[in-house]
Image 1 (tube, rainbow, N blue to C red):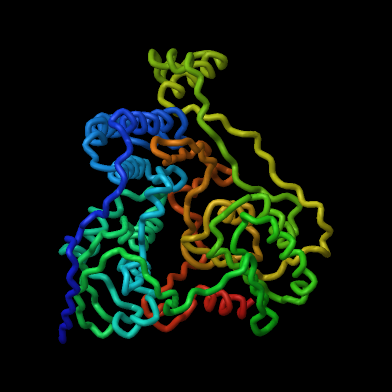
Image 2: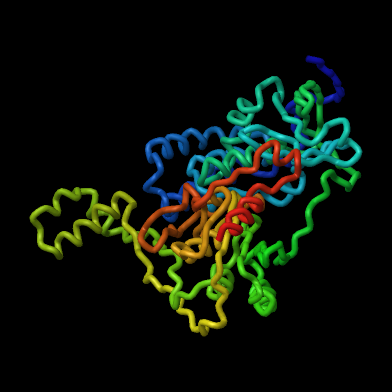
Length: 461
């Protein structure tokens, strides 16, 4: 095997951090840590899944550690690491804008690199146009700062990412593995598609070259096209803008000519659940849509105080009234007492002839999130629909947002969403009926195996 060695030297070491502001006092740092810890204890809906002993031990350790941080960037990184132990995609700590605006991910001066998790490997899937021959698409990052890539991710990246699911954790770890302040350097080893190795030192700097290869695909709020045999394709790319409902309704006269339908939700990161429901009502003959059920912690301090002195076995032999009282007290003390919101399915008033109920393939993937997942729950058990692709994002809820010292912020997930019967999807994702994963070869050949599978599936209907 032939080896190609290219070394680019910079004055900085591989882990040099650019100069970042240091505005927070030790008092501010301890206050911010304590505020986040407090809000989690009172409001985090999944607190019952947290190892409380470890959580408290980490907090006590961080009281000292945050005061040793040399700048605001290091302080917020510690808070993000603390937050990540909660393993929730809707619970986060965010940098102040002054720090966030100084962070680079893909810009390295002469290079611009975009990474994708493919089969558990960090693969370059896009690069600035002038470097596409030097570093071809499909090149793998196999070492970072002397460590194998997986080892580097496990030590330096994954511990700082808040995610409810392992697949999103790995996706984000790869795509964000070089996120750091301007001036930070990395020594990397690349494995090119032809098997050659290439060593490179890259430093975060502005990249003036705008053109990338392959070019970014432009996506509208809603994309629509036809495939052969009267198969209509519609991509619902966001439920954040209510305009998508009007765009869909405008296409209804044309859609009525379709014999089969593909609904693509792979690029839909969510938004407002009711926006998606407005569209879904046209795609079913049901008179009612059964969306997510949800609950939140109910904290009444007196019940928590009483609960310290009892256990659930004390309810044995008690009257029904006493059982109810004891159960609320004990579960309150354990932070496991929930308020279940009244369940309200969505009624549909459309006439039958207004509906488009034909064989339908719904394309889903790791980026199908939040309100888009709510769409899938409401569409569950529709006999004419099939989900094709990969597990979804696996996180939703209602975050409580609050300010942190120095201009940062944080949010805590306060609402637990499930299927109507209580089946959980947060932490797992909504699973496809037919799983299809885009492989390394698919990327190299610019194939869309999920779409291809959908067309094949519908061809047999």
